[in-house]
Length: 330
Image 1 (cartoon, rainbow, N blue to C red):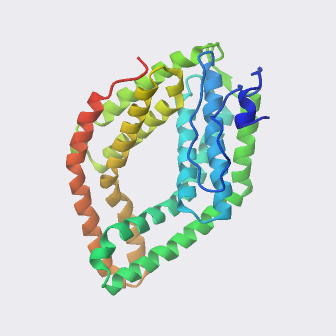
Image 2: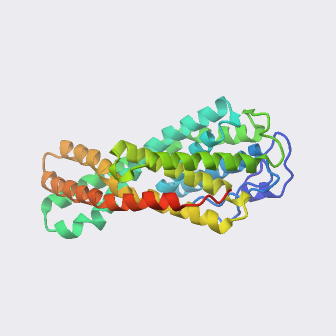
Image 3: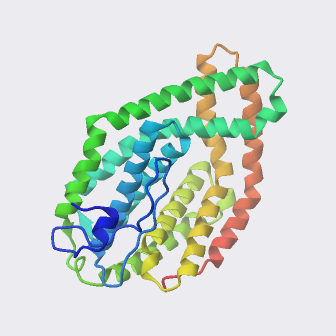
């Protein structure tokens, strides 16, 4: 099976990958973001799905190789992004493509992401501590005990992440899903292989994703933490969908503006999410470190609780901005 740039110019045949998947770029030993998915007007829905699936797999593999070579937090982040994109894509195309191979890939991606998530949580927590409370609390001994506790747990999480990537199951995940893509090992809807069907599918999917975002974001500032989390997930899926399909539509600038706005809104909700992430990590540290971190822990909890309250006004502005975002696929 040919991948990436090699596959772009070769004719698409039944049972093989389409001739395009992702825009080629220079190889890098460091962290790699997702490369833009490039689709064409004649692509079928199935062709589009294959391109998106391969894009996510390429991103995941590139960052897995980089993480084995260097302990870079961005590699972990980009692997998680790749797995989220893959799971979102499988869900997005479920009305067109279904079957055990897709279900298995989605579940395996979720399992790997959960291990990577622990490493990422400790990375983010450390960054938050360094960027925020440290300057105000750097003379307090318990704060350095807290930093040491974070470093220890981060090292453990990274060791577990590397071990997971070296497991047979994780290696098979990529190999088996690539094989399934090459064989088109799924059930396709009646029109999923029709030439040019990708654009109509994309329009319907993007409309559905946008409606879900609007519904989940109603009264955003006053939502419960769980409902805000669901709104953030909806924003993320809509952004991924826009990135997957934007090359099918002529309004490229509008598409980029749409995706960028969703990304900014999603990041803005992080102020609410900080406390939800920080609390269980601090609970774990306080329970296991004999009370030496308790004073710093109390201070940090208050710090991020204040940050979460400060996010309320941003949430109100975000809801207004969402209503003003014009679809680029109409």
